[in-house]
Length: 511
Picture 1 (cartoon, rainbow, N blue to C red):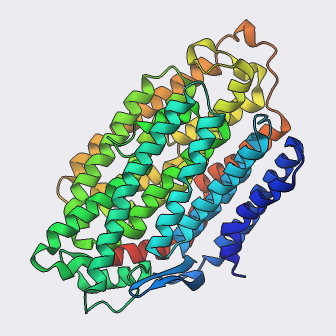
Picture 2: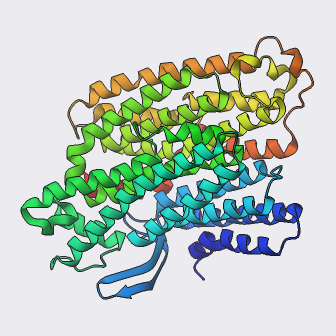
Picture 3: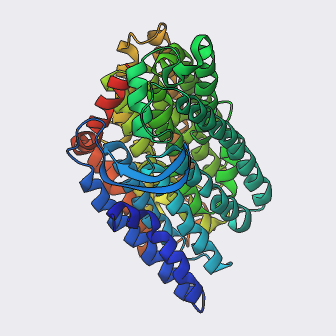
């Protein structure tokens, strides 16, 4: 069986194994084994995605699934460097989140079932090379995340889970509508010779058409208008996931109410699916529209960066501060996407990966102190570094990485996004947008330094004198994400080498 197929469905095998467990303890071990095995297999998938040519995929599989005349859906999967690093990131965060889930007592088997099903949906989305299959996996993720927040979340979990569900479903409607418009357009176009749902076939046709309508050239005089509507509709679907202002308001509520390990997955992986969808579908399918839309995408990026940082600076809830920091940091991805320069795209993709490890680590940091203090009020801590030196050191490094300190991984994505954005000639006004975006660095430094001072420095709050340092399990989970944060900050070249052919392909298709 195809290695990629095994990686996608191994978590489902773990879910089925949960049916034969007798108690919560057995369920934990099954879930932990499923997460660890997913991580191991995702590592092999990463190795298979190295040294590929632009637009080349490894571990491909193509099996007819639903054939009804021209409605020809295939189980079509494969990986390139871009999807390879994100599948690996999924496996890594699954392992760290599984360790953080060890103390879940409520409905243990149900929790682990939803946890594993969620990872099948995520990996399947990254691996899909068929539009319909992509949409199926995209929707599969919705159900387990809804229950993980709504059942195992905090006091306002019902509100947060419903809000997450409605926002995501709202975006999915636009995604499905776009897929249907594309299907009807290409199946009635005599110039199109491929499969109407094949992402590689549609991408190749868009490259051949190169007109204002892209793959919707069959609409004739209305092709440009229809292409714009489909482009922006699908952009909204992906923007909800990123999340892009003003579709971001579900994120802080979901993060605050979600249990710690689910916040790790939510920030580390689910937000990346939006950026991945833009790179894999939105931009290559409609290169003409993308060029016209670049200014607005860059503008949305700078709004995310500055607005997210300002709101994060106003927070007193530790977890909500980290949640809004994710809104800010994902703005750098939009800034790099809009530039369409080698530096800009490299910075955006580095940010996708590095923000995944850093934000996941930060939510683990919040979870450790919340388990002891049972609150997240930044103003009620103080001096924890002296009582919890290992935990305090890891937390401080994570915050410095997030604010973009050189020699830590958060620096490279932001730096290259700025360089690529400032030098681009892809759209007018890029220099001004870039200069405004740099304000985000100042605000980010302000709220992280203030958080470090309030939580870890100064005099220790007497109420927390007896706090134990991070346990072995907590240390392993945090160090698993700390290692790539430090390594890629010092030497990012190996990661860049994996996805560079994908960057070359995107620039050839869109630029």
